[in-house]
Image (cartoon, rainbow over all chains, first blue to last red; front, top):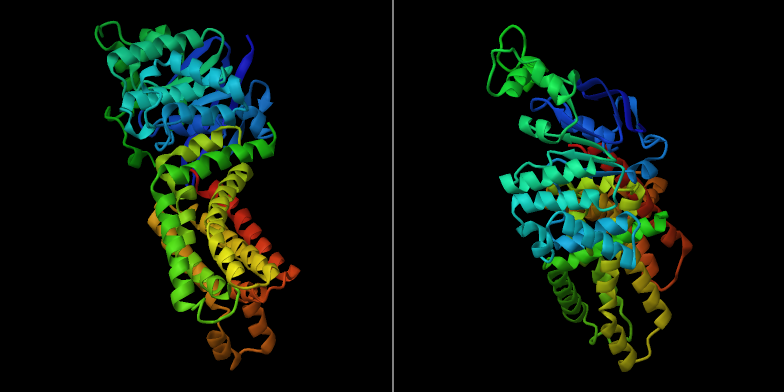
Length: 257
Length: 247
C-alpha cells in the first residue's frame, strides 16, 4: 500500500515545554487511524504539524510523496483538514464559505459549484446552505467544517474531533462517511470517544505526554484489557496506558511540565 | 493555481467581508459626512474663493487617523480570535498571499471611499477652473497615505485577537508617524539636535511627504516613501503572522 502520510521523528517544543517528543506516523491508503490521548497529550499539536500549520522543532512530514517543508503549497493540496473547533467564517453563508474554499482549492465556475453541491449533499447540509455559519448549531458547524475538508476529494484527511458536538444520529452518519472515505484514503482522526475507534478505525494510536504509548488495531487494544474486565474495556486500557504507574490517577498537564 | 489567483481569492473574501457587517455602511457615511463638514466648515472651501480642493486634502490625514484603523483592525485579529487563521494557513496559500490579499482588499475599500468624494471635484470644476493635475496628485497622495496607514494597521492587527486593541494601537502608531513632522515639534528638537537629525526625523513623517504632494507635484521621492513604508510593514506583517499564529 502506498504511504500517503509519512511523519518521522516529529518533535515540538513551546519554550521549555515539550508538547511532542518524537512521534512517527506512517499511514497508507485504506487506513483510518484513530488518534487518542488525554487532553494536552499532543494530539492537536501533532495534527497541526501534519498539516503545516506548525513547523516541527524536529522531524519531517511527507504527504503523498511531497515533503511539506520543500513545497508547502503542493503538499497542502493533498489533504483536507478539519481543525480543532471547526473554524469557519461566521459572516458567510454555508455555500459562500464552501465556495471560498473551492476557489482556494483552484476550482472556478461550474466545477466549483459542482464541488460545493456535492459536498453539501454528502454532509446533508442542503436545508442550511443559505444559512449564516454563525447561526448554525454546533453539529451543523462541524459538518460544514467536514464539507470543507472533503470538497476536493483529497487522498488524505486529517480530522480533529470530527464528531464532537454531534447528536447520536449525526455521529452515526459522519462515522459512516468517514468509513467510506477511508476505503481508498489515509484518514487520521482524533477523538475522545473510545467506541468511535472500534466503530470506524482500522488502527489506533494512543499518545501520552507527547509519546506513542500504543499503536495497533482496535482489537489488539481491546486484548490488552485484563480478562476479568467485562464492561468499558477500552476505557480501562486507555487509563492503564495514559496514567502514571505509581499513583493511578491521571497526571495533570501542569504536573507533567 | 498561481499566486495572483490565490491573492485574488483572499481579496474577494476580505473585500466582501466589509459589506457583510454594518462596518462598510457606517464607515462610508462617517467618512463622507466628515469630509464634507471639515472641507466646507473648517476649510472654508467656498469662502477661500479658490477653485481647488486643498481644504479637503488637508483634513485627510486627520480623518485617516480615526477611520483607517477601523478598516485594518479586523484583518488578522478576527482570524486569530475565531481560529480561521488555522484554516487559511492549511489551505494552499502562502503567508505572502494572505498578507497581500488582505491588504489589497482593505486598500481597495479605502480607495472606493475616496472615489465617492468625486462630487467635490466636480463641484470645484463646475464653479471655476481648478488645476486638475494637482487635484489628481492630491487623490493619489491620499490613497498612498491610506495604504501606508493600512499596512501599519494590518501589521498591528496580527499581534492581537482583540480588534479594539488593534484599533487603538494603529491609531497611536499612525498619529506618531504624523506628529514627527509637525513644525512645532521639529522647532522644539532643533534647539538641541543637529540639523541633519531634524531633517531625518521630518523625512520619516507621513505629513512631510503628504504636504509635499499637496503642492501638486508628483515627486518620486514622496511616492517611494509611501510605497517603501507600506512594503516594510507588510513584510513585517508576514513575520508576525508566522510568529503569533499558534497562540
